[in-house]
Image (cartoon, rainbow over all chains, first blue to last red; front, top):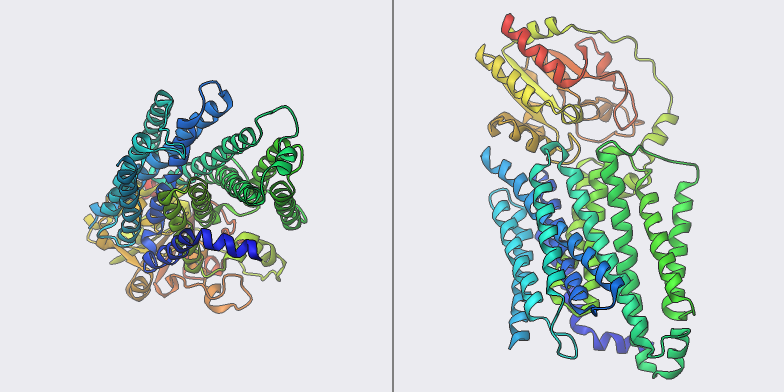
Amino acid sequence: MNEFLNWIHIHQQMIYVVILSIFLGIEVIGRVPSVLHTPLMSGANAIHGVVIIGAIIVMGRAEADNWLALVLGFLAVILGTLNVVGGFVVTDRMLEMFKKKK
Amino acid sequence: MGSTILSICYLFGSVTFILGLKMLSNPATARRGNRIAAAGMTVAIFGTIFLYKDEAGHGLHNYAWIFGGLVIGAILGTIAAKKVKMTAMPEMVSLFNGMGGACAALISLVEFNHLLEGASPSANHSVIGDLLNTIAYTETAAFTQRIAIILGGLIIGSVSFAGSMIAWGKLNGKIKDFTFKGQHIFNLLLFAIILGLAVYLAWAKPENAQLLLYGIFALSLLYGVMFVLPIGGADMPVVISLLNSFTGVAAAFGGFLYDNPVMLTGGILVGAAGTLLTILMCKAMNRSLRNVLIGSFGATAVAGEKKEYGAYKEISVTDAAMVMAYANKVIIVPGYGLAVAQAQHACHELEKTLEARGVDVKYAIHPVAGRMPGHMNVLLAEADVSYDKLKEMEEANEEFKSTDVVLVLGANDVVNPAAKSDPASPIYGMPILEVEDAKAIIVNKRSMKPGYAGIENELFFRPKTSMLFGDAKDVLQQLVSEVRNV
């Protein structure tokens, strides 16, 4: 119990961020019309590509002789970039069509 | 100085993500919102590359590797995203989502090995056991926590990756639905084993940690596959949306691992928004998420009594063309079949040909017609169908009363009257397009096979209805030339 309370105390900032982000995430898309479900999903998909930052950190910290870390990190950077770039470009293409018909 | 600027970069990134999501939920601002989020992402990425310092104050190295990966990923991503056909959009999203999940899983693998190496300078034998005896209590707690975070990212990332790949395969028809008896129990068991192993690894710290880690990795991949395999192809949009929020959570674990606020906020935002979006999508189909995931849809429906519907009547292309050419008002109801046949251009062609003869042509769009919500709008927009011709469900239902001919193109469940009249039907209660109010209905389908709900459609057997069998694209092209000859 003590351990748990201690954990909360140390990480209160993060806990705040997590809880507030959950509410924000729900609030912010609450009124989306069904026509936009697909592009919104695609846009959100691009945003979670932020995981690329973790990949960059892994890659940038890998020692020059640690081949496992280098190769896996390199793969992670490629995959993360695919997620980010592909995600945003696909979403833009979808939304471009929406604009044209207006 | 550098770290302050990096903090500002991350703050900027987080704010653009929130703004981006907000703007994406409004048609007028959606495109700008997407670009704003992309800009924030770019700032966060380059800020990390040039300004990041680890706990010891060292910056990043291996720039060649980093930029190499970025360039390869960016080129491949752009080409794939630019080349994909509009009809294949959903599977592209699934593929990209899988990449994100795999990225999170790989990060966890590397960080775990790091943790093991860092744990013991004499890397000769049973690392963690030694460690436990030597380090102080608080450090053990921190260690457990790090392992828990790493495992969280690994499990969720791998499930998301494997699941997305299956969803991708299903959407482009490479993978068929696969179910066996007791699959749900098997899945639950598998999940319990993964959790058990993870708890064992994080808290009990066994000798062969590495082996266990790869075991968890493999089982998580298997779980992702088994999780998505039994779910019907038409439900994939919901599944992709769910896996999308999974990847968000995996990214958030990365945020915990590196104490990185932009990963944390971005990940949690997508996790929360994605979950809500999943629920909204289910609602649009008048189903619960549980119903989609357990996929009881077809299974229970078949068990119900088989009603005798009598015979249906067929119509030839020539006759169909004649009926439409002399109508005052035609409403087209597009569905899944139109998307599969990629017939949106042929459809627009028919619309123009009929309009040239003075026929009033409109489209009735059911909110869940096609492979994902909004799919029909995107598809018809690609074929340059003008926006004011697309009628949403309520509006269309008013118009059917004054309509001479309704042409149903590969839609089935969204026009099934059983949703209104038969409480025993699995789709009972779902709002439908009330095409029966029109004077005549022509249904184009490839065969009499039921739609994805697995139930017969009474509409096809009504006296007002005639069936026009064939691939939507072929039929539409023939209709166009027939109408021109009338």
